[in-house]
Image (cartoon, rainbow, N blue to C red; front, side, top):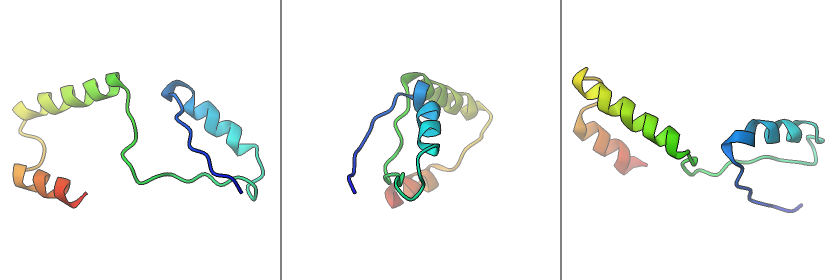
Length: 73
């Protein structure tokens, strides 16, 4: 068996995964790495904007919990 790593653009990822579905299940194994998935600049911008907007609404977790969560990753 061979192993390859692909970087697939978000715009065609679902189509690509659909193509894999037609291949024999006993011949192709899709695995994921335990890394944070790549996100586009637009997705990152939206996440930051959502976080900034949540500050005034007092949503989120306390800073010490956030730091602990990061350190445990």
